[in-house]
Amino acid sequence: MDSPKTISDDDAKKLGKELTKQHPATVFGMAKCSVKLKSGFKITSTKIKAVRNNGCEVFATTCRGDICEMNNAFYEFHPPLRTADDLPIRLPAIHNQVCSPSPLWLITNPLAFLILLACSALAYGVYIGNDGMADALSLYAPRLEGGISHVFGSTQVFGYFVFAAFWFSVIAHGIEASISVYYCRTALKLAFGPTCLWGILIFIVGYPIFSELQELLATLNDSHKSH
Image 1 (tube, helix red, strand yellow):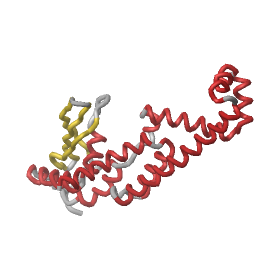
Image 2 (image 1 turned 120 degrees about the vertical axis):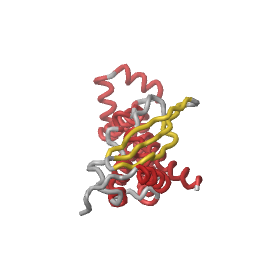
Image 3 (image 1 turned 180 degrees about the vertical axis):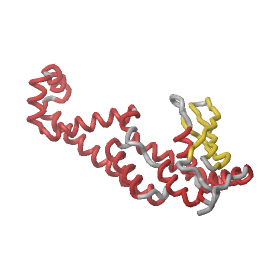
Image 4 (image 1 turned 45 degrees about the horizontal axis):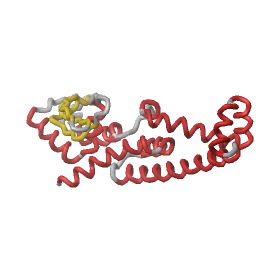
């Protein structure tokens, strides 16, 4: 095993440039993990200023409309690199870590949480069936039953609507999940675990999580256009 060796300033900057150029999705993921985003702001550009033994000096531009801010952050390595030669060995694991979705997005993302509740309600409606929905509405929410009958004509028609909406969401989310799995494996080169997690979360709520993946993929497209 090589003895620990501090990465020099020149090597640190050189590694930062190489990492920014060759691994844009990883750099974006590092920025997203380390930069504290203000409400409504999105990361528009990222780069690694220097790679140190204990982590990366990250620079990111965040914007909300015409308002942009420059952000400096630090992404820590756990454990630190012993030498600069450790970076290529550790990079695949770092890439999979920073490019993985968080299950907490189902709760912290307002739209994802709303869709989760809606899909859960649709699934429960399909589970209990038309008769079950009609009985539940008449017993626990007679006013709501009246409103539904006024809009849909009857609770029976409403039940058909719930059934159709549920299966439409299953098919739509299934297509999005399949696309996400394909791009996770082919474009992002993610391991099996992170790929499955993207697929599962997107299958559950669809667009809100799929848009997070699109951000990662956009960094690759922007990088290819700039070369």
